[in-house]
Length: 205
Image (cartoon, rainbow, N blue to C red; front, top):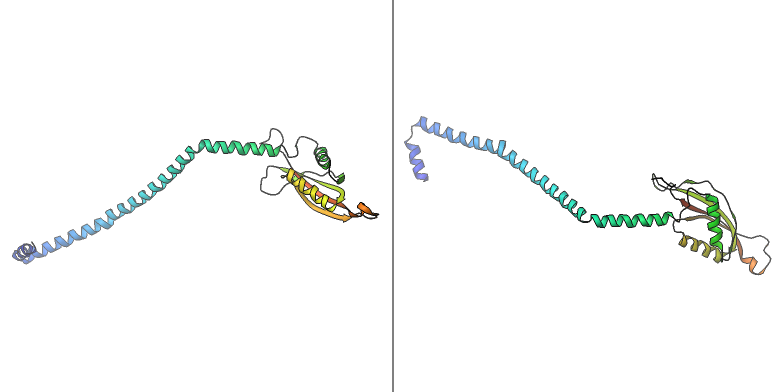
């Protein structure tokens, strides 16, 4: 085939050969320009659209998975809400006398224990300051009493276990001056601070 093309080309006059070469070159240039100017641009656009389609398919798949788990998610929300309500029931009630509530709670907890609570001071509710926009305030109360070292430790540990949403802090221990002998010589005076969260007022969000 190349021989036929070569023989045909040689039969042409020099002017015709030049025109034919210019036509071939022009055609090649036009094809190259068409590829880079149009086809390549369209291929790049197609590649972008395919990438966007893959991302959309991924989002649709995620949405479908969430829809399938809707009932399960709602169950988890309901269970978490019930746990939160149970926790709030152990908090200081916002609509009541906070001092009376704290006094009753600590004195009742003291019953049957070898620790004597002598005084519970009235404190002013304050902000917790743990997280921004924390939905609870706090009531701190200073507790003074006395007992033996291991009984005081047991009292604090049992209190924290029974009321895990309270915080015991600023514990101070000191010997009781003038203790005579026997069991009294092992007695210590203690002072600590109990911080309890205050539940949301009724009707608040």
